[in-house]
Length: 130
Length: 65
Image (cartoon, rainbow over all chains, first blue to last red; front, side):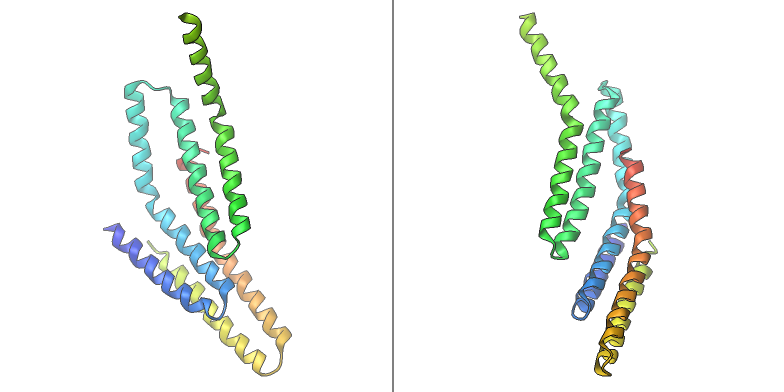
């Protein structure tokens, strides 16, 4: 099972990071950076299969592909922003972390604006129809 | 998952740099100790950057950003 590998790697990395942090905090950040990246990459195949399934399902139901693509993009931005912000917060740089989160929120909002616009259009159509 | 090697390597560099740092500081060469720390940090960043770029590429392809 892959979960045991991930947990083992995480525990080993955490132990080593705490150990190194006593002398060299900046290199401990490197350890946690590497561990986070490796674990993220290790779980990617699972995410890929889940996304393929979602796309398949949405095709069968008949939702337009570009809306699903926007949802996927938003979750990708959220993932990567969370990743960066957590690492910055671990390193003690709270202000940089909150800037990263802010950038992520802004980009998500910009991406989802067309959807809001479409929704308002639909509402408008309904009002004028009645 | 061959990533454990990388983590062990980074930790080894950290311990090595710390020991070298202590030795140099004890023998009164603070400036060289600082440079050792800097060199260790740069080496660690170079090792980690491959993983980060791989992560970004993977996320880019999975979420088609």
